[in-house]
Length: 304
Ligand SMILES: NC(=O)c1ccc[n+]([C@@H]2O[C@H](COP(=O)([O-])OP(=O)(O)OC[C@H]3O[C@@H](n4cnc5c(N)ncnc54)[C@H](O)[C@@H]3O)[C@@H](O)[C@H]2O)c1
Image (cartoon, rainbow, N blue to C red):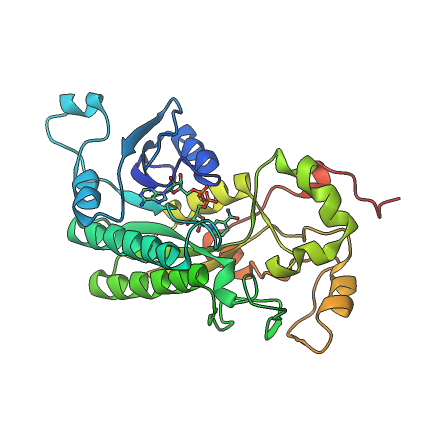
């Protein structure tokens, strides 16, 4: 599928991550439809107002046209792929119950419609929070580091529970059809302008990043991962950690380990500044090669 034109149904394209990734995919020459409650208003991305918690709306939008130009085609085209980002993206935006209901229902509706319409590629946003560290009451440490996709996902908060439920649902639909459904356990998304705003504090105090396993994902590298997921076929159901290669703190991996992970099993040798959010699987199976680092945007206080 490398380089081929795709008609992509992108949910949540108006949000923090989607407003980078949806235009990036459109820039690769794909037809991108943004299904969201609010428009993105980006040239090259078609906006469709859809409430994905409504199964009928979701099915209708996925079965329908993307643009007026498509009226001139001899037949209505089908979507080749779905990128499902729409969600309530963390706890404490609305009630826990609504967070869970919105995310679980919308993900089910998207996956059921994809299944019934025969769409063979779905990429969906899961989350680092599935590992249970991010939104734990009090301090909870990973069982081992670096945290890879085999680490247990037994979180206690409503948002992360909704993401685990989304993964289980995706795995079940994939078993029904054999389609490719890839889940992205996305770390904390950082937009380019946020380096200057946020990183000076992170670099001064690494404890601010404990709940994110000290990792981050540049929104542009997230776009690359999604692109690779669309290009790499035949993996069936898989989940991938998605982070940058380094950490979001100035301290070295060894220093962070000594201070925050004393007594936590270390499963392998790690690089000097290597992320604790293991991205080996995305590198190996998708060919993901992160391009960005905070070091290009903010001065490293430890560098001489
Ligand atoms: N931002 C992060 O650091 C981060 C980290 C890990 C995972 N994620 C996941 O990545 C995805 C994108 O996150 P984000 O930060 O861009 O979130 P966001 O809130 O900025 O964007 C989500 C978008 O989904 C839309 N949406 C919500 N409910 C909807 C519904 N019922 N129907 C249609 N659209 C709906 C919203 O209008 C919004 O535009 C989410 O699934 C989130 O859980 C985000």
